[in-house]
Amino acid sequence: MGIEALNCQCCGAPLKIEDSTCECEYCGRINIIGGNAGKYINQLNKANRLRQQCEFDHAYNIYDIILSENTPSADILWSQALCEYGIEYVPDPVSSKFFPTLHRIKDISFLDSRCFREALELADDKQKEQIKKSGEEIERIQEEYLSIAANEAPYDAFICYKEKDSNSGEITEDVELAKELYNELTQNGFKVFFARETLKNKLSVDYEPYIFAALKSARAMAVIGTKAEYFTSVWVKNEWGRFLKLMETHPEKNMFFACDNPEELPRAFATKQAQILGKADAIKNLAANMIMFLKGSAPEKNTDSEYMTDQEVFDQIIKKKTKDYLFKIEKTDFKEQERNIMKEAWSMLGFAQVTKNLYTKSFHIGAICLIISELLSIDYVNPMNHRFGSSSTGMYIYSAILTIIFFAGLMGLFSSIISLNFFDFRKPNSDSEEVLLIVFAHMGTVILAALLAHLVIFSLYPFSNVIMLLVGPLAVLLVGLVRWLNPSFINNKKTCEQAGSMCKRISNLEGIAKKEFLDFAAEQLDNLKQSRDIGNNAEVKDYHYDEIKPTVRKIIEEDILSISKIDNLQLDTNKEIIKRLIITVIYSLITGFISAGNFLVIITHIEILLYN
Image 1 (cartoon, rainbow, N blue to C red):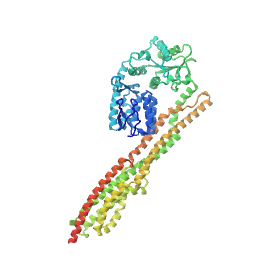
Image 2: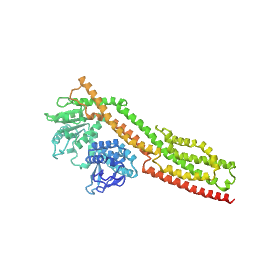
Image 3: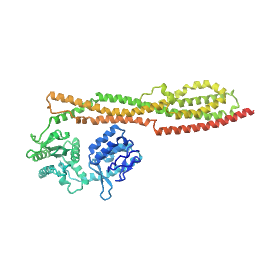
């Protein structure tokens, strides 16, 4: 496949690629290789590296970008499935082989996930076999983890914190704060998940089922961070991100967090209960609020624990306004341009269908008609039949039919060349039946001419027969081999080339969608400031676009998938060209052999006439 710098999806080692699947010579895992991987190799290596580092969300987003810019393929969707379930491949200390471990268990089976199923649909036979095998391996581990999680007693609270500083490698001060909170909650009779205590007798590769059980059962989570970067570290974000996702479907859950400066926190924490660290009894106050929540009472509000910035208020308002915007998205400039491009795309798709059908079906029809006419000629020039002479009504009708079929065959062959000069096919849903009607219409136009020419051809026998027999195989060769003079072939090639640039135009529309939405957000912000519903510290941020990004991406992905269907209609591929050459050679050999047989019969007939 010509790709040398692609790295292993499991261990990161360079691969030696020869097929759509490739075994890594370092870790022994089978990799799924996309046919177009060379186009996005740098992005793919970066995303795979991030996934190996357990940066699953970041990696998933890069795979998403690759999908938006290219035709969907099995390798990218398989990698997204791995990200979705937090699959990390770790080496076995005994065998040194790599095996999967899960960091994001879900109740939904891995084999039922959308990305896995779509990857399986797009995979070739070799890839499909490996994807099934790897998926079943992950499924077995998932079932084992779910079994462990099911036997865990439910938790009341989950404490999320950073254990070691990534730069210094030292224990963070957050550990002591988390321990203090743990003691406060457990002393009040609550079962609390605190990794340092809960997981101390377990191997790191076995943590996930216990984390999953705690996240799923806990009604409250406390996120503690003395530094802003601690909140976005891999494992801390993995825990609070999953808990936030559970809160969307479990309104009985709530999140609390403690920090030095709420302005530095991820926007996901907007409007959540806050405790400012550094204040006296900060952890005790945080514990008191969590205890009141767990007992069914609303936490007390005070200036130390309730903190909501102008930016957070605006973020919340924009989130609510997004629904109204999406309801009116059909009236946006983004959607208008998308409709115009897709209207053009459907026209191109119909044109590609017609050009391919004209190029192939008319050739088959014409060649078969010529073969039939030459087969009939053997009987026509047979001396025993021709002895009745031109006065025979039966032979006259026979020769008329033979002439009509011959001319119809020629017209069928050349339909693929002349049809596009007389008809406009730039419309969607042009199907095979329409093409056949056009070919037959062209053939019908010559029937009258053939009948008129019949008298001349019949009177010139056997010289007319010789000409017809020579024209047959030559016409098949000419139409079958000459592509650069065929409008159907040329226009099909141009249409498929335009389809590639059209995918880029569709992808570029995301920039328009983003600008329009941010302009909408800016208008809302101005109105809020003028009405004094919000202070001057709020701003329109790039992350506001994230509210509509999934919808925009879905529209673009569906459009690109539709446009990619044109690729299946390309005539200018090695497969199609070789197929055309083989068919042309077969038809030419058939017509050539039959012509040779006819010549022998004609020569025999002439010798009999001369002898008589």
